[in-house]
Image 1 (cartoon, rainbow, N blue to C red):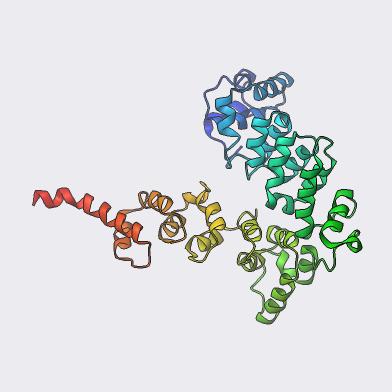
Image 2: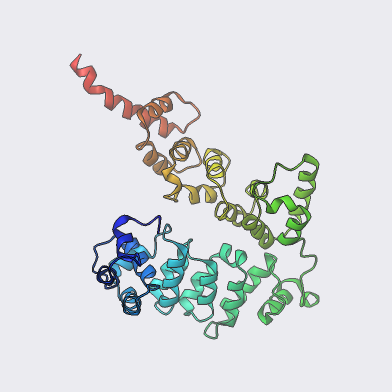
Length: 359
């Protein structure tokens, strides 16, 4: 409630008059699409039964122009997206938007995977990071009676190669035989340490406030992480602390490094460090410069403008939003991309042109 805009809050606050809440429940309040679906979601828990039922009905009958905008919004609260996926799982157009939205909760996608259509399942199966980060998605896809064998085989083969075991799932046992041979039906050879085992061995990795690890210990940790499967590295990237993330961010597998930047524990300082990193992976930078919330931090925007790994059109977009003093500095900075430096000079020349004409 604290983060809601005032015009939304007054229509969903239980202390507001029922008539005011009912107006919002009927979707009669002029709100931006994301605010509209958020308000309706909150009203489904309203103390008044009529308001609750009206909100549910309105939410499922919103016009496409509202749903198509809101359900793609990665800044929408995860519970809102999960609630809508539960109701729209049978409508492929909206289910697709929701499973493609990186903010939609993994557990909601897993629930949808057990009974979604083939089209939606194909989209779910293509998000390799989700599959490895939340293994129950694989489990639920295997339980979906409407899916073809080829789709499930592809998912399970990928999962097995990436280190998932799921010993109780018949399709995964079959995949292990295909990938490793008959002797691997129960488990793959030497699966390596799990994220839980690593955190248990190095207790500080589970503590966000832990001091930096000693050099000797850091070296042994690096050796242990090298033996981990991709799936377990992704789990460590999600559950571990800054030290674990710092190491895994350099992993050559893009799924692992992207899992780090998408970790719910990632800090603003880490985001800025990535934005400044001229060796950062393209996929990791893409997550950063596509996140509207992070772009609200001026230092991040400035760092992305200077980073040669950021596509020029994006860098120029950020350049146009910088303060004049920073733009001037860029005209003299030989470490920024030449296209950025050239545009910075043009911006300064254009700004100074009228003054020169008056002289």
